[in-house]
Length: 618
Image (tube, rainbow, N blue to C red; front, top):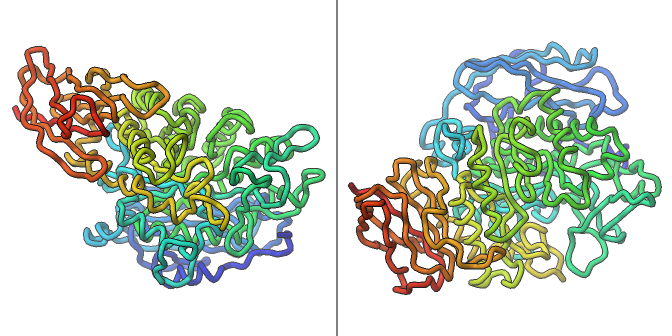
């Protein structure tokens, strides 16, 4: 796409979305308005420049100073094509809200526009219908878990649809339900996962350097700069195509890397049409109670970006563009998908660019939390919140075996505490377990329960498809294996709901759990780089609640650290079916030790995996 193919203000998909969402979006230009909206509902301010600019994306900064009950902040906007700028805001509390615009240019169309709106609360029935109406996700009081702004716990159950913005998760303008197959689209996948209890979708906003151009999948310039690393079907020689349904990509062509002008785009010239289509999908996710986790780009863009553009300023601008565009959606942010440290620039370079966002623009104005994909953990890659000033929750990922869950315990013990999750655990279909098989599901459950019970109390993100793609790779090609619609139906995905059933079985008490794997013995009878033979434990400081998980091949165990002489109600939990089984009343000895009962199949060594809950009786 060339720059003279300027984006239209609204795509057909957006028109449909605006029609069905009604008051979800609101546009106003200049004059005072007395519109009424709900709290946590997007309000859109639209401005038209009176001057022209060579590159409005890079040359113009626009903002609205927003005031309301307990709130007074500057909220930045973004260029949306032609002479249009938008600023998206919302009310965090009921009452009257006012705003006044400004910019870094002497432009009468951008400066000194004012407006107001009134915010009202959602009733409980409306919030139950759509949990996003409970507000932005924040950390729990103790810092270890997530909850909505109204205090309702949010236990994240996510799926890795990294290619959501592209044609691989297609947008259909109608509401027709399609079976999970080649004709399915984003809405069908949302309906399916919503019934399974999922509440989050992880996506990468742009794959600007990936195109099915017939070039080698690992593309280098003459000086060795990597323009593209691998992510494609095994055996193919070019990268997967990542345009949207209308053929748009995130940035305009031609680029400015010598010899690759038509392969690698100009990262200083953004294409708003591409992001307008993403708007439609993100709004739909919010309208159906899903919280998008939006990563701005993938790490293999870094080497070319740093070498051929002004670093970190150019990348900082791009991060801020995405964050400003979606700051009024209920979502989570990330400045980079850092799944490996190879074929990219060092983590400290991304850290520099993301810290510059906070220094120049401030944190996201409505409290959007920021983490990022990592390898092995954000704490190891970027440091804690003193070094990564943008970071408000931690992740581990991309090392798939159970010896890596300890990184979550390390995160749990960091001070000050922030929530932690496993963002890319073992994916169904990887290693020696074909997708959809019981063994693959067993390995997935190790990641689910082992991660949460190691301190990842924020929740868990699931993935499926194996090394060749599936859900995370957006497999839709006819010759591909593990298509999106096939991997979506694997039993391991449906079993994510049982993780929430187990963890939330005592309400919000799970937020007070502390990882204590050393209390269950034995706890490491399997190989370190595996998924069997390990046991996990978390408990409250009051010792009135214990949650345990035993992988397959665990021997009968004992539990210490309970109240001496205390009696506990024990219940086995089946992580495959979500069923509970009474395990009787257990009494601790004078040292606070309990011999745990045989597994529900009456075996002394677990023939499959089991979870166990102990609650104090007296």
